[in-house]
Structure formats: C-alpha cells, structure tokens
Length: 595
Image (cartoon, rainbow, N blue to C red; front, side):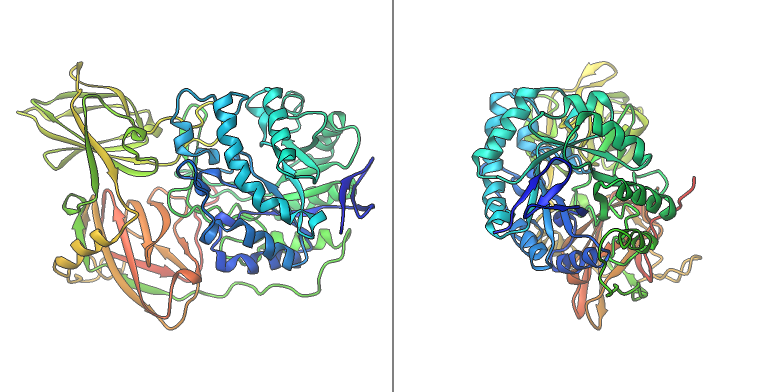
C-alpha cells in the first residue's frame, strides 16, 4: 500500500519527495450531484489534492446523532476524490471558523454555559470525543495506507488566534491517534510569532495561512517549523462577503504571482478557496469585532472556480503557474453559458400571522433562543403591554421587527447597536417581536453566544417578565403551502415602471409562492428586485438569505434543485416587496466591487 510521511525537507509519497497542490472544496457548500464536476475541475487546473473542513453542527444538530445524508455524505465525497485520482486533506476541527454558523460548533454545545469551549475542559472533550468517533470512522479506512485518498489530518484550526491551551491540543492529538489516524497531523495559524507558538505542538507539523507576501510569511513559518516541508494550507486567493459591504475581489495577476513565489520556494499549498460554493439555508456565520457583520449567502470567494462551477480568470492564471512546476492535464473545463431568463409572478401570498408555524411557549422571564429550541432562522416573542413608552432590551441578536397589535412600530438592528424603541402613546396592546438570527459569530471571543432577545426587557424602566416565545418552524413547508393554497390567487397588476410583471405590492412579514416551468434542469440565477429581506426556496430547498442592501443581487440555484416541468418558488419576506414577482438572470451578479 502507498505511504505518506514527512521527511527532513519534503512530504514523502512512497518515500519520494511530493509537493501537495491542494484546493479547498467544502462538500457541505456544494450540491452532492455536483461534487464530481467540481473535483474534476480541480484536477484540470493542475491540483492533486482536495481539502475540506467537517462541520460538526451540520452533522450533529442534536447530541448523539451524526447525519451523513445528502450534502453531508463525507464518505462519498472522499471516495469521489479518490476516484478522480486525487488525494485529500481532512480538517475536522472541532472548530472550523469557515465563515460558518458558530464556527461549526453545535448549538446544544455552545448553549451549555458550563462548558468551556476549545479547551481541555472535561465536558467539552467528552463531546468532542463523541464527534471524532463518528468522523474518524469515516476517515480511518480512507487513509492512504489503507488504499484511500487521505494524506493529512488537521488538529483544531487557527488555535493560536484564540487560545494557548497546550493540554487541549495534546488531548486532541491523542484522540486522533487513538482513533487510528496514522497519517501526518498538521496545525495552521497565521505566520505571527505568538499564533504559531500558541497554536501548535512540536510533534505536530505547523503550516501557515496567508494571502500575500509569501516569501516573508514562509520565512516566519520556517523559524517555528525548522524541518520538513513548508506549506501554506490556506492561501487566501479571494475573500468572503458580508451583507452591506462590497463584493470582495482580488487581482488574478497578483494572486498568481504570490502562488508562483510560493511554488518557486518549494512550498506546498492549499488554495482557499478553489471553489467556494454557497451558504445554503441558515448556515452562514458572522463576525463581530465591535460591530456585527453577517456573512452573505454566496461564498463565491472570488475563487478560481466560481460559485456556479465555471472557471474564472484566476483558474487560468493559476493553471499557467502550476504548469511550471507540475504536469497539468490537456483537457480544460467549459466556459459559462447564459442561464434561462424568466420572470415569475408569485400569485399566492399570506401573512406570517395566518400560519400555524410558531411553536410558542410561556415564560416568566425573557428567554434566549436556546431555551425554546430556536438555534437558527426566525423566532417570535410576544407580551401584553398596558401603555406606550420606551421599550428597551439588553441586546438584540440580530434583527428585530416590533409590532403593536399587528402594526409595525419599528426595527432594532444589532449592526447599528440599536436596542431602544419608543412605543406609541395609548392604551398599549399585544407587543410582538419578530427576531431574525442572521448567523452565529464564527471567530473570536463571541463564538457561540446566545441568540434572540437578551434581557433585561423593560418598558419605561419597568421589567417585562411575562413572555410567550417560540421558533418559527420552517423545516416543514406543508402547513405553509396549505394556507397559501386556501387563499385566492393574486392577479398580477400592470407592469411596474421597472418593467416587472406582477406589480402587486406585498406587506411583510409575508409568504409568497409561484411556479415556473423549464424544459430541462439547468443552473439558474434568481434575483428579487423590489424585495427587502428574507429567505427564498426553490422546490423546498432553502437557497439562503437575501437582503436588498446587497452586495449580492442574484442567488445561485443549482441545476439538481430544479426539474423539467413545473417548479415552485416560495419566499418569506419580512418587510415587504414593491412587486410580487421575481426574475431569473442570465448570469450571476454578486454586486459592486467598489463602495
């Protein structure tokens, strides 16, 4: 059987020097029917390895389970990598960052305040052990020495930016070896002295994460990793987007030059990302370095392979660079073609308040979301107030629309540090607060923080303690469809000034649905002009959040999600739309690249 090890100066494959040319491709961000296509295109760019994180929270939404269906079938993904003749790097965390909800940590874990995250705390390590049991049952038989693709496994993730608990790192290493993982083990940190010192152990192989000044960063890494191969295991060739900011792009020429410099120095590399994919559903994370910023739905990352799987300028430039150092296949992937252009009237709609989907419970205090099982998406709070006045919360996480007797009276936005709102003068009424969780913080000290409305809640300084609260249940769409079907169809009005059919305005929070037909399944790019903020589904698949503030203007619909014939669109809009119609564009539009 083949062997893979670390020598004095190089990685060694069957005893001979081997350069790892890897690209990041997260199986959980790509439709499983498209895995083969994306893996093959990595090989066509000249890569020999695929790297992926493993998201604990997706596999184990409740303790004791480990889901592997659909886009969580890690075993199938690794087998497809192997079938393409490529190697694999697995990074199971347990913390992954990845601009992913709560950095990949499960809600049942982070909501337990007695557990010290990312430490040698016994309760934390017990949970981690259960998780690694399941992950390594998949990885162990797929190591290279057993005839599989896996050549490297990473311990933790950029730990030097978070802590310095060497006992924790030792225990993770022991757990990994105890589970039969015999391939070399690595760590990754930014090439900053403190991070490289705190984030690893001498018995682990240190690698770096950076996107520029390659020679300088490799020199810093070499001081802390004096022997063995140098490796940039996160070469940041692009960047992620956050709502309300520009679409980030980086120069293909500059990135190719940095890659060339790295390879000329003899280093191995993992391109982060080779193919970014999509933060489907409610999976995107957030950053909070004084101001909260939610991650956008598209994780295109300005990568060599775009979100819809087509090669970008970076693909071709990187391919040229790699060809100087390693064989590159003659075959090349096809360029993008235009997707179908359609306009679809959403001719059925119904208010959220008509839907039997709020799982309400009574509390004698203001509960955080975890107390009623709402870890993602939307939740609803209500209480009775006897008069108007100044409403205040300790904090809002992350966006709250406040209604009094069904009428919207204001919005509290965490990003603007808002937590106080005047209620109209009068006799009071039923106070209802619709709260949207816009993503769990994935990096830094606020990792795993509570969501929802944070106490105290007061009206003119007097505590509000009697609450009804619950999650808005969006997993089962049948109750929503039944209410929509029972109502009348909404006839489209005349075309709006923008030329959009279905110029019937909608007041939120509202569900709206419609159908469209296709001759055959194909990639689509949906846009929602005139809509504000919410989530969109096609054939029941949650494509993710949309926000009128951008930057992204279209959302990717993978071809396997649609079918020949009739297809369903279902939108949950929280604010309102100027026209009850959506469009499908010919090409993706991820927004402006300059403010």
